[in-house]
Every structure is written in C-alpha cells, then in structure tokens.
Length: 148
Image (cartoon, rainbow, N blue to C red; front, side):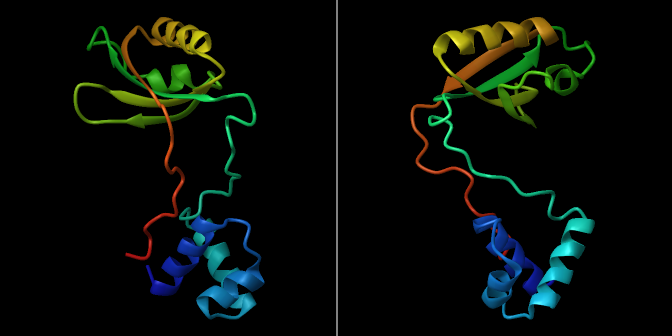
C-alpha cells in the first residue's frame, strides 16, 4: 500500500466525516485524486464503512463488559458467532487464542441486564462465561496505526 493511501486512511480513521476537500488538503492531493483513491480503497475492502462514535452513557447503555466464552462440550459445533448474532447488546465478537474461544464486547443498561444477557448467551450456545465489567474507558476507537 502506498504512503498516500496510508495517509488517507489515517485521516479518515481520525475523522470519517472529512470532506474530500479537507482530506485533499491534509494529504496534499487534488480533490478528484483523493476521491478516486478513497473509492478504490472502498472497492478493495480496505475501507469497510463509516460509523459515528457514540456516547453509550448518553443513550442509556452505561455498562460495558467483556464476556469470554468457551464451549462446555469442546466437540460441539463452533457456531457461537452465528447463534449470538441476533443479540443486539453484543457490539463485537472476537475469535481469540488461549483458554477462551470468543471474546464479546457488550453494552447494557444495568447489572440486571448484564445478568439476563449472560443467561441468554449460556442458553443459546451452551458455553461457560467469564465476565469483566469495564469501570472506565480512558480511550476507545483511536485512529488506526496505518501510517507505520
């Protein structure tokens, strides 16, 4: 990947709402050249999409937790991501190395809602869970290190 594409990705990861004019100024290209490069990056799947950064407390989801899951029966099918995809509280699902099979990032309203969600997860995929509740978030969603 060319350095200019990395510069475009860095700028967009810092502010996905940059206009093509502002992006062109940041990376030192014409607006049409930046537009073409962004379109190519999207077509190649390097840029998967654009999203707003949300203040979850402001929308009534102040409790963030990580839930590690591992199957109770290791011979069971590895279909947890598909079976859990309908639970809207699960923001992200990561396949991980180590004791656990997946790590889920969840956002809920209260400890009671977390308890309910844990039961739903255990029932849906017959897994053991280990939960870590987030106390504070010094930073999140930082710009990607694409320029390195």
